[in-house]
Length: 589
Image (cartoon, rainbow, N blue to C red; front, top):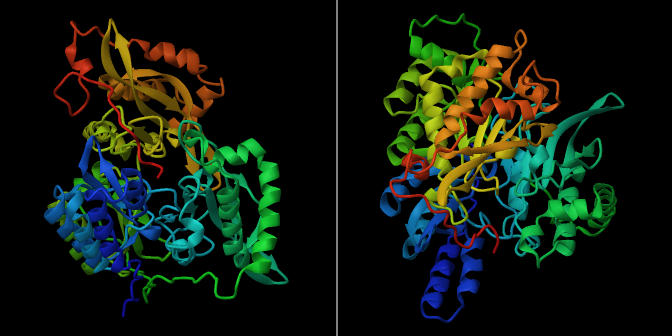
């Protein structure tokens, strides 16, 4: 039997949303008051269209079961545009929902235990966990029960209803995977041997985050006992709630507070606050570990069958990862920029039931969906089933897995259509079969439509964020290019600015970088290693440093005047002349 799924929902919240919506329409509450309320319930206005909204479904640790996939498909067809979007925070986003329909959407989500509560606003957002947690080759133990436990403790908790700004908690599965160093709180599981016994615990990081000013999270201590996990998280949240800047919206994320006070000072404050929390926390306020279904399995010992199918071989090399459970594999669907249709959601639900021993899927921070616990003997049949529904795209574990935020397709703050550009880059790299190049497999490309980093451009090998440039008075969509970012478990660094690139030349510039790398790399040197050398002023002859690389790329990144090439003044996916138009953002309530 499968374990009962967690019910994150409260049915009465849909009724409450309907009541508040009616009060707003009758002018009995202000627009700002209603705005704060709807953001608290995961409803974000669509770009320049106040009657339409994006409904963000909170998916703690990224776990979704087949019934929930089918319900989201149903909602997408009935109330949206027939598709959903996977965000870099392991949420499902349903775009272009008519405001009057939101209460009914919430009711439908509640039927399968899903909620939108605190998916937006000045709250603790979705608690993410590495999608490999539980199957990772390198993990000391599965963090999923802890991630879901922390999510449940803070959901609707008074501690979490009016923070100075949004707050993010990220669990990594090991030292090599996950985004622990770029969260307000980041956690990596650890085992410590004491008197012949192994104790569970965590390495905790604090004060990380991406945006116009980004910081890598600072370590709290070498090892935090499992029993101190909840008190540590409460202490950090309380300090932010008490000391965070509620006046200056552009500087009220916790990372600014940490670095204004100094990481050393804030570390001392956390330790002191944790003592107070432990002394005053009532016995009822405890961390409930929420176990996932763990399959009863036997390791498969039989020899692998050789499949003479070139497309399958490519998919297997780039989308399939071995689990620590011998004979079982994890498969990545590699969704283009996170988009999945209602038909594909239904197909994935059936595929999950048929092939996954754990009967759930995992949403990922790279905007895809993982199927786990797949028997080796089922892989080829699974591939054929996925391919029937357009879900068998190769390139998931390679440079071709391009991340892109929603950009101007829906976001008020976006300047450029990063969403469409990410799809174009992925299509080009796959067409050139660069996903099969061993030297490119560990490199990443991430794109944001503005400096706010929803596309996580600052931790990409090659990152871009959207902007605009004038040439002889005409406005062209452009991107600021960054190099050398990364975030893997306990290791992270922010990319360095390189140059401005016109939107229509981004693909050419990426291909030029790859060409220069191939011409000058050391034996078996990977692209991310080559870029790291260039950033450190230790690059090859003629490309010793970022300045020399910029010179090599300048001719490729030139913007022609509008009379010579008007296409450069139209954004990807657009038909009209580009305008850098934005509206009030709703990242904060």
